[in-house]
Image (cartoon, rainbow, N blue to C red; front, side, top):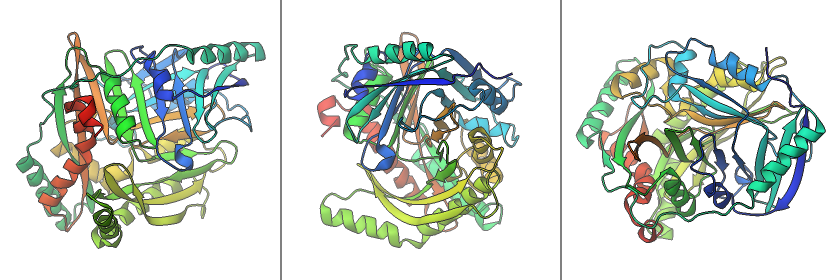
Length: 459
């Protein structure tokens, strides 16, 4: 049986306040969740903050429940979408960990050492939406009656007046180091290349692991504040689960569904170059990426994989690729990005799409199932890394990130320990040294934010 329908929505315009500043007031509160857009363009228009879910759903590795069915039940019956509101108008939000993919295609994956669940979500009938284009905040409430929805909107509006706090000035950790040694990672790349030449797979995304202990007075929010100030990304995110917390500065969308139109979009990233030291070298690196046959072939393989995943929940002929091999530039790297679109078939939902496409093809490989087997043999369990932070609206809308450029925190006594990973897509002509250097370019912003004092980290 589904949850009681939140059939009424109230939207109250409020003066602008920076989303991260608002979040800082309740960042240490379990149950908090945020999507913090940064950068330019339509994908960066909206940020969302949520707290105090009225229902929670947490499914671990050993739980027998069907996570997709449970998620659909938590959402309940589809409700109308307010035409003048933001894309997310209340519903479910949270984490799909990488090992949730074991529920799609059973592979016998092990659980993460810190106990990260496969699925951890809350239902949020009150939230704040921030329109970066219009510089306006919106307080939203959903309820079974207009009065209940209004009370929840008022509750969300009250969050805007809570005093914020600044980030810590000193180092956040003094011992953030690579667990995966350089030579071990290069050996893993060489093994994957050999398996590709043997015909086992076409591509696999292999990651390196870094870990550290946070200083006594530093917490996960301090890292988030630095990342969104230093290197804003369109799919940054936050989730606090009590003894676990997640900070993401992802540039990559997984899948999205527009409420009402039920148009699907995915934008896989494959291909990376660092930013140049000056304008001329920066342009040259972007041009090199765009012209790279290796990177284009790698990107195209994932485009084909995502087209196949979307076709499972779309009418025949609706899957298209309107943009192939576009360059997108961020604070630390250039990426090669393509766009695939489709429509949800009648009777299908965004939760069906999540089950059809998870985990993201850009961070697994092709063929996906065999690539995941290769990854499991070469890496410890990923937990949140390469999973997704997502929201699913009661109106059928959906959006999600790929959890790269992401730090996972676990309480250790009175403090926190942190781990992060960076990967590279390995193909037949991959060079182990070049792939290892790519992981170091991708981890650079996280490492700088964790290990340098604030003034140096922002320089």
